[in-house]
Length: 318
Image: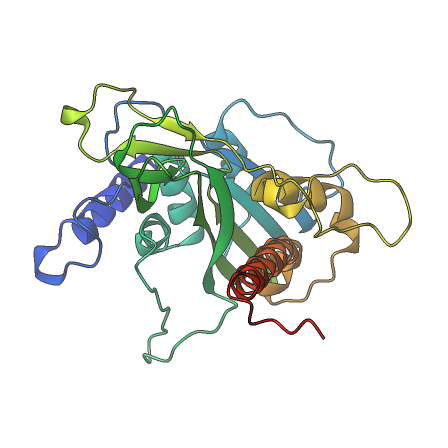
């Protein structure tokens, strides 16, 4: 396993450093880069069917041990049971990435494409036919963040965990921003009708880092607080009528919401031999976040148009 993970890291670095076919930006932050600080990676695994379904839960102190335990089933069709698992990953530790890549035969470009939001990755088979969404997809998730006055004006990188998502030109009048974090999926099928779905998610906490740290006298990074709207007019309630104090989508961690949902509703998740079906709950969470974002944006546009009409007396008062 050590040789395989070493080769996997070398393969990833070859992709990054290939000057003849440069795909990723020169400043890309990736799991195998030395940042000078610890990289955290949260993992949760849920088994819909499989070898460990009826066993007592085991606590693991190490991500390697956990992945080796869950993914120790043969992938060559000799497994006695059908195994279907969903692995949720927030942020990427290099050891976690290498293990997932080796155990599930995932090319490093999948992880690198999540690091670089500008890369559009397509998956093809040996006949150069494009694979469908059962193998791979990447979706942006909208976020709102406050830019406190304690952040001096200047040029910054906006970062979710260890990933640079966009740049920010902070001006004195900048009070909030919108950004997009990413969710990436890879589905791996194997016999008998088994599969593993891997879902990568950006952390909910977001920071800005000075683009030119040598000319900055401030901290190495600043956290961007979540925005608190004066009115939460986009609401969701359970149709059971049971009281729920869950946060609205604008304040919802995608990873935390997914872990809670899969943990509570795992037995209710309809699934087939297509690994895409294992991502239903995470897709519901993404839909909810986008719906809230679009509704609020549309009302902002309406208010701007209405205010403009009132200011210029063009609205009918009939």
